[in-house]
Amino acid sequence: MPNSVEKFPMDEDLSNSVLKELECPVCMEYMVSPITMCESGHNICNRCGPKVKKCATCRQPLLSTRNFTLENLAKTIKYPCRNRKTGCEEAFPLDQITHHQTVCLHRFYDCPLAKAPGNLCLWQGPRSEIKRHIDINHKLRVTEAIATLSVFIKAFNPTYKYCRVIYTLGEIFYQQFDVSADNFCFVVQYVGPEAEASRYKYQLTLKSPCGPEKIKVSQVTQGVKVSTDDIRQSGKCIKLPYDVVKNFLENDDLKFEMSISEV
Ligand SMILES: [Zn+2]
Ligand SMILES: [Zn+2]
Ligand SMILES: [Zn+2]
Ligand SMILES: [Zn+2]
Image (cartoon, rainbow, N blue to C red; front, side):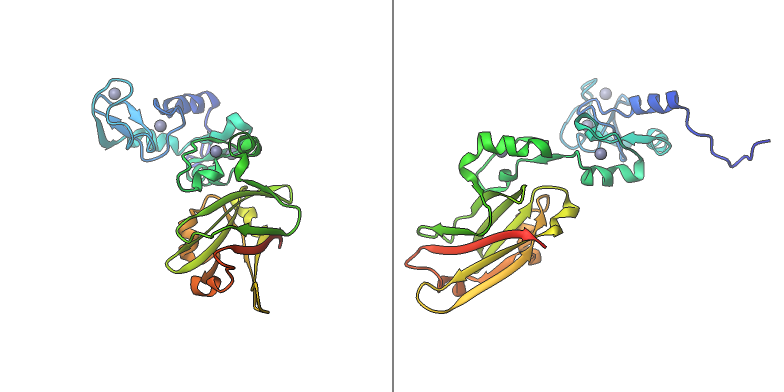
């Protein structure tokens, strides 16, 4: 007699038919909890639900009623990663798939320059295609750096956000600096897996145009997924009182040196 608490491995066909049921009719991705339904009982995923007003299958209104039966079935199977089209072959149980997809090496990235105010780039793609996308669409916003970069900003405007992409060390970085709440904030973000962002640091050097004063500050890069505003608020960037930075302006021009290196 088999032990009654022993779990039977899920039959592969059954697993596949549950997966078929879990396909969202709108985005075609597998649904994770909460799965809600329309008046006639069609399911929709938790990402599309809030975006569409009517059921994609029958046009009936969507309800907040959850499909617990399907949610429970979902707990018994392994979900293939949604980045399978871009090469991920991994599959995880429901409680791990969402986390995996945020750290997955094959995940889709937004265009890094979509962070720049006024740049409505909607491109998304795998990491391997980011550089190509930038080179074709945003070439003027790219700086290629070998070592230290000397930057000269003619007539620095404290109400403007200066955003660029920097290619260095064989990697891509997003850089933004601006003045907000009387602070000069300088942020560099690593365009790659979040866990690897702490492998890099950036250094900013300001030198007085007419005296010996000098400020040299370093900070560890943050992942590109974090919003630049959140980084500024958490203080994980270079932040200097703008009153201090003003002393380094020559006329209105801002000059500084920066570098990105491995920690
Ligand atoms: Zn969906
Ligand atoms: Zn429906
Ligand atoms: Zn994956
Ligand atoms: Zn773009």
